[in-house]
Image 1 (tube, rainbow, N blue to C red):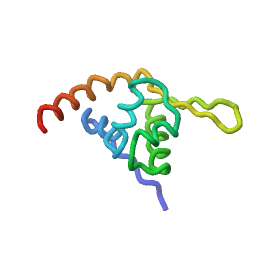
Image 2 (cartoon, rainbow, N blue to C red):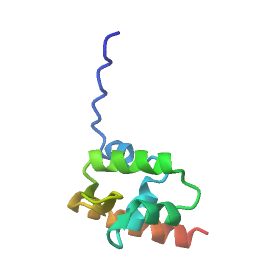
Image 3 (tube, rainbow, N blue to C red):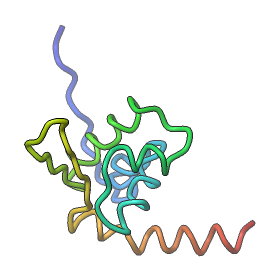
Image 4 (spheres, one colour):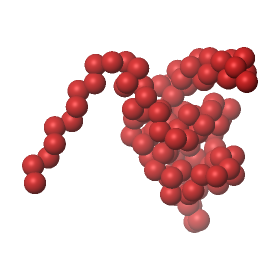
Length: 105
């Protein structure tokens, strides 16, 4: 079966939503704004997310350059997640979302 051609996105808002618009993605970024976190810490912080979904969101955000995954060569494996510069640039967007949410209760 021939591979479908990827859609070219010219709208900056649509580009942004393709990266951070999936359920839980913004909340993961929010949690990482305060510093590095391990998988288990994020799982506890994001009550209701499944480990499978968290793993998928973390991988997607890493693939899009929003966060970095640091794997320590230990047993058991130790993995830390942190925001990249690109991810930290989303801080102002989350601040605005917080202000809007606070004023529209």
